[in-house]
Image (tube, rainbow, N blue to C red; front, side):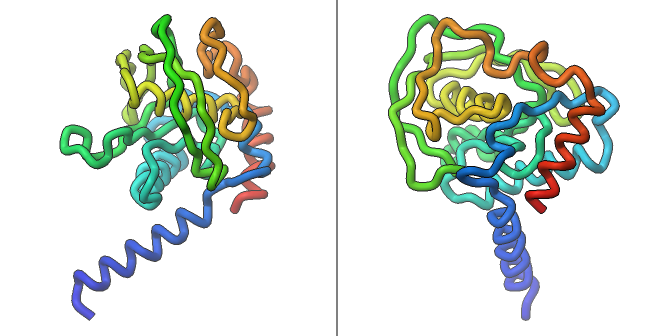
Length: 206
């Protein structure tokens, strides 16, 4: 077997493992709030593994334009987005850690959305046309960025997951006057309690 074939086989095997990790339907982690990544978490093997899993997961699922940590069995407040994966301008998925929507447009639009965790279900969902997001990158540096149109929709969908919500499942409509879907102030204040809850959930996943 040549190196190219071996590499392709290894990639397919890894993709199958990642697909098997996907939490779907009535998995309890999909309705649980995530906890924020702390400064001391950066550079640790655990956080690196979650980031790598999300990036690889976006690539493994052919239709994925975004993925949130709880969908892969982790309650870290992390999302990966790849809204224009077929365009050369944005050829790789990006990771947003502790994302917080700080501003949004007054205008909204309705568009059909689906979700990897609820396969075969598509619903018309109202979203803001643009959002401003404050987040950390994989190295812990803070950024503020504006996302528009489809990218804004993807970000809002994934941030919903971090609060234990998915409108594809509930059929609820985004409140255009509501707070950020993942405000830091509403996340777990006790890391110890969050760690215990995470261990319980991950026990169901792996």
